[in-house]
Length: 212
Length: 105
Image (cartoon, rainbow over all chains, first blue to last red; front, side, top):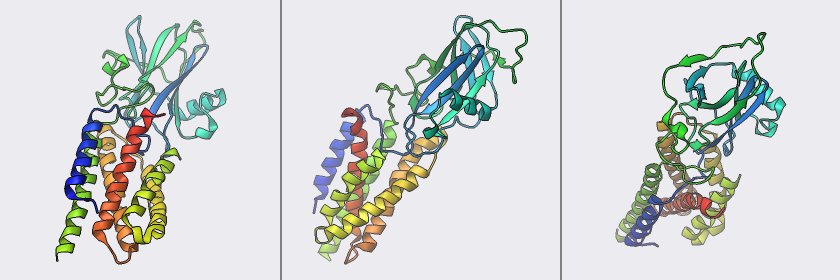
């Protein structure tokens, strides 16, 4: 039977190790790495949020109230897009942007009548723990006069989100592993503390029983 | 699937070590229980930054307690302290393994 002191020292050393570890918890159900997949078809851009590691099988959709933003870096123009995603996602499957065996792990928006330029697309607030912060698209075709967008974009005066610098995720933590993510270190430490507390409780109960 | 395999590979032998006289029974119990808690936890979807962070703690605590309850029920004689230790150790090791895995893949 492990001793109380022994178990504490093991847990303490684990805590110290993990505190400085660039951690990604593949084994945890709530960790998702997102990737943007973008396709340009003339003046139409389809932007998909693809969940690479959503092993739980549920769709990783942008959080309620989040909006898809389009930012033209050279003109410093930021617009909000609020389009129907169902038809956009269907179109993305047709284009092969989303694999059918990943049904439900892809969430797309279609941006129509986009003028020529280089753009960054990203949902705000950024969905999921970490991953790619934005997707990029370059449109070269000029917009034909006959082009009418289903839902015209709404210009915004605000600056693009700071996290679009590509180094900071939604939690203000750097994504330290390529394509991976850093889970909140505080929460993994709390998990280990709870586990240590339960283990210690078991040791105490066993000792008490042995004495009585 | 990788996550489930990793969890089972770590937790089943750990629990078996804590119950040397009922090694096979408890290993089987652990296999079933861990798979069940794994499916339940992976079926949960957490939305929102804060909920996701808190969700990790709640989910792990739930798995630990649920597994300890099952081990206590199945073990003969019913042994809560040992079940608690086994569940805590198994969950801590699998959690640690999931944190360490990216360093090796």
